[in-house]
Length: 513
Ligand code: URP
Ligand code: ZN
Ligand code: ZN
Image (cartoon, rainbow, N blue to C red; front, side, top):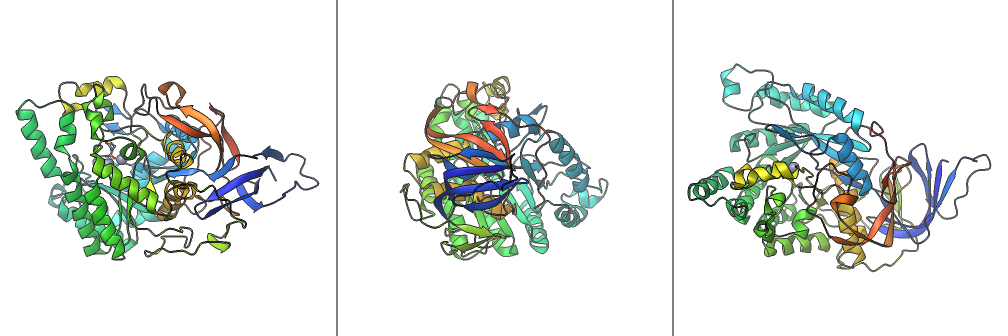
């Protein structure tokens, strides 16, 4: 054994128990009381976790590290991004492959993996971007000029075989798909049993709004919100849901931020369709009021933060999953025990109406509404955000959050708004299950030793100065948190301790999904 974590309160999505955790070779080898090192295990490190929570590391399935946007790049590369993630208790991230024009999907995947392998400090997976402008390998044909080509759709199966089983498309931005292209891509995803992630905003509607505002000199950042209000997002979500129903594809709506869109997702989920929804901490903590602030452009992301009604609907969904609204602090008398991805004893029955995607029965709450929390971490430096001064359309889109997601949600649990179990379900167990990260998302025998020790008594105020991203400001500045991670392990290696990053680039491994 390399490590024994003693007497902590282990919490999984399905329950909690005061127990010990043994780690060997990067894996959790036992979760039971009174584990002692073997007679010959002189090297075993023993960590006393009395009074601490022992949690699975978060799985943030939506980051944009070193993403090129026109002539600039998102602020964090794979090193700085995964360093920030680790310091916030995120032990797995999933990022994107964005093929260039005329570049094959597999070629782009190889390049992205090479970049990430050298720099990632925690394990990572990838999603493949599918773009209408991506000419793939047939640049000159009329079919390609007309948009998405069949060779690209064919290559999706090879991408899946190479370990990337989720694909991402946009309904807006220059790389958007047309409705017909989206239908064809969803149909292809259904054929190869892949998951389709969709950024849903109605491009025509928001472009029309922007044109009117710019023409009439309404260029301040409040008009970023007004050009992409609730209805713009809801209409696109409804369209994506309709197309998923029509094609039978598994659909995952990224960064859902509006009440009406959530309603459309919930209706489809109740009908039994394999449709999932992610929201982000920025939509829970902020409303569109931020766009009235002098530094409003720093909050520019798409979809934008919405009004209070949407914020309340998102919170209601986030809190409802386990039927409880606050943390009871009750510790169970039997451990949740997982073996080969199945709950063995002391477990809550699986209530999922939609079958879990890869490992059955790890999710214990009904999957209606928001299923995951992820960050959409895509920050830009202040001087880059300043491009939006005098014209909101010039602001690069995206905000930070990979270091804030888990501490913020755990703090909300610590304050009694929802249970720790539900936070773990949304931030760790569900994303791991939905995206096929089979060894992640639980403190259980056989799982990777991705472990967060959390001190409920440690107060923490977020500041750019105590974050580990390369970006020179944070939208979370001044946020007061109750409780904070004090140690983070990635496959048994200590990578964060009391504010200090201890990880190394290249430690992170690619996870085939
Ligand atoms: O504004 C955002 N969300 N930027 C990142 C790219 C995306 O749309 O997810
Ligand atoms: Zn997006
Ligand atoms: Zn994104």
